[in-house]
Image (cartoon, rainbow, N blue to C red; front, side, top):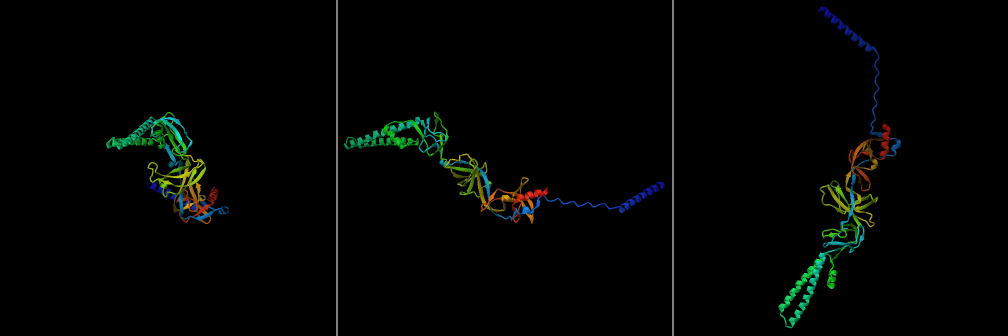
Length: 392
């Protein structure tokens, strides 16, 4: 055992000597070379404008100013309901003749169609009988007065005949009123009285000047008073209606000026709001607005699509022109000056286009920019090209 311990101690000593020798050699040898520092990678969002680009830039301090937010909603051309007539018959009958067709211009009183009605004949016959009875009883009363004056009859007989006349006159008035309700004019009643002839033919007449925009009747068709047979519209003036989302409805008012684009005609027209619905459509959460447009040349057709541009209430807010905005990676950015001649491409969130009192069209800043920042208002496109060139 003592022998083994001495061997172990001898090996341990040799190991310590070897380690010390290696350390001495390392201390005496040449020092390793120091690695060069890694160059900092330039910020891709920063750019220093060259002298050529600097001359193209316009930098201004952004501050709040009153901006009317302008929003666009889909609309359509529609009939002016005040200029539309839905024409039907006042009596049931069978259509015997058509005189007006789709797209035809008609005048007030023009005959659109004719129909034959047994009911009309029956009421005319009742009127004619009442008229004849009235004439007969009138002569009877006149004779009774003469006989009473000659003391041939008593006053009771005269009174009886007068009562019968009053009943006959009441029946005649009732029949006349019924014929007027069926659309017969007083001149036609006088003609029945004078000629004693009745007719089952009922003309269907236009109640206004306009254009036939619907025809829902054919020859031989049996029609009822509840049926709409023709629709006549005066197209010299039409409406444009639009559904405005309730979130955008703040500031809507009668008389407010709006702009209307008609893509089918390539036209842009100015108008004023003539109606704002007092209620919200619960299904679409929108508010109906409308305006009227003159249409003397009949170029505007009902159901044409339109885009209605409405400016809301003027509210102080930060806003930028389109020339200051750079679209990058599907996001809006602006260049903010950090130091003289150096700019940072800064992401921003912009709202719907707005308009100032001067008529300038601006984009309100929702997020990403503070008041007082110096922003490149003109030349942002050239500055962005410079940034991309340097980053390559």
